[in-house]
Length: 254
Image (tube, rainbow, N blue to C red; front, side, top):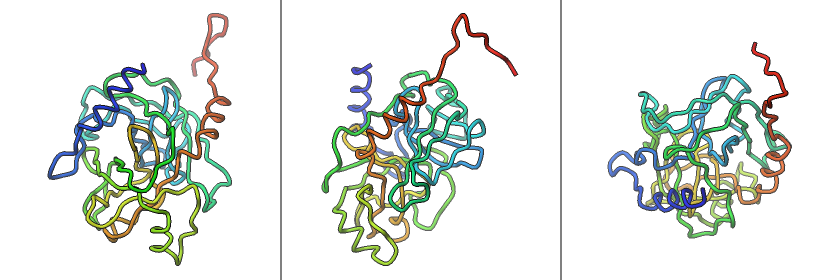
């Protein structure tokens, strides 16, 4: 398993977006999940066979939202997809707080790891200004255009100093230490969509919190600083370990 994850991470470095459309090389982000239905239309990151990290804004619904894994083009059946219902939705409290934007989603059944479906490791360190990160999501890379793209899109953004965001949005942004500021002028700084996933050095470092780069390419975008949530994420996963049927446990079909 560790070897396979290493190969995936190494493959990311060489899996550049397609030159014209900023479309990801198909299945180069095997941890990227599309959450849809039940009021949700957003992205997430698979972190093990049962759990997905997404933003507070995403708001999936238990047993109504579907997690589509191994998907690149949402308009065709590629033969790599796994469509699994969402079982549990755990939002980081205090809910609707300006300090946090994070949701954990548990799948109704474990994902099967394949070349197109792999988890992304949690962050082993926090991102630093100057780090180069990769953001993926189903949105538009053209300012003022909305709607979901056919294929998964990828952009590359630099992490910048927190003060950059604080100086850029002083009138309405209450800066939190749980935020990461990324993107600047003359970089690929526009990708619409909800809960886009940011990966740095092969580790999960952020999900989209507030998107500004599509309105002004000089403006950075704000992501949840996931390196600070490792303990919370692990505690939630430990408390929600599913009880699997055994030979002595009858399974009731409804």
